[in-house]
Amino acid sequence: MARLLLPTAARRLLGASAARTTARHLSTSPPARAVLYDHHGPPDQVLRVADVAPAEIGDRDVCVRMLAAPINPSDLNRVEGVYPVRPPLPTAVAGYEGVGQVHALGPAVDSLSPGDWVIPSPPSFGTWQTYIVKPATAWHRVRADVPPHYAATVTVNPLTALRMLRDFVNLTPEEEKNKLKQLGAEQVFTESQLDIKNIKSLLGALPEPALGLNCVGGNAASVILKILRQGGTMVTYGGMSKKPVTVSTSSFIFKDLSLRGFWLQKWMNSDKAEESRTVIDYLLDLVHEGKLKYEMELTPFSDFRLALEKALGKHGSRPKQVLKF
Image (cartoon, rainbow, N blue to C red; front, side):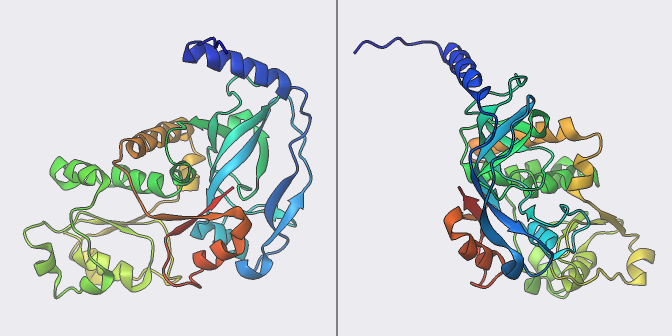
């Protein structure tokens, strides 16, 4: 059978046009499955997977078929009711970031095409479901030639890490070590190794660090403060231990340390929306080039309970859980 070969751009335009015409006849999304909760509490007790009714697709809306979405600690904190920003109850859909593929478009949408990969940017509630309908402006198109679990997780953790490296301390080129050797660390120590008596031997010829990043609190934060250089800065962006950060008076007086906080959601909801999308594209470029890697474990959405148990630590120490739809 003879085949007509068209340039990629032409195929994309023709395909998008045809699909968009069909999409105008879709007034609602397909039926979906979602992870829901009606009240706050322990995630393994209040979360449930259920069918949800099709959602109306407005003129400027986009229906997205989700591909992957992570289970982040902040997702669990929202379910528990301890995170400062939470979706309204009752009946909220869990999840906050992820990646999906454009399934249908409202007739007034011309910024996206069926088949595009998109992420909610800024992140928004309700990513733990098979289909989502949101305004076109809520979606950011990303490259589709990276593993979906990287696109699904690029916003919350990698973006937070990069912003903290860039925004708080003007590190010298030597200190940055070529952006931490293209985001690969030179030295890695466990908290137990970072006893103040051993730190000199561990660091060797390396200078005392100017910047410490704290997502744990408690003793882990105290260790970071002890090893910072004179005038160093510690940025706190999480509190996984649920213990406070305590600072000695001498750390302030004699070392002149600075303590700062960083909350990605506030940063993205300011005037940084376009900048954040540019940085996300940069991070996915690094993924495509093989320069940004981190450990994850994909679990089918049908096995949500297992993924949740792993995320809660019921199966020992596990990589970040990513739901695969």
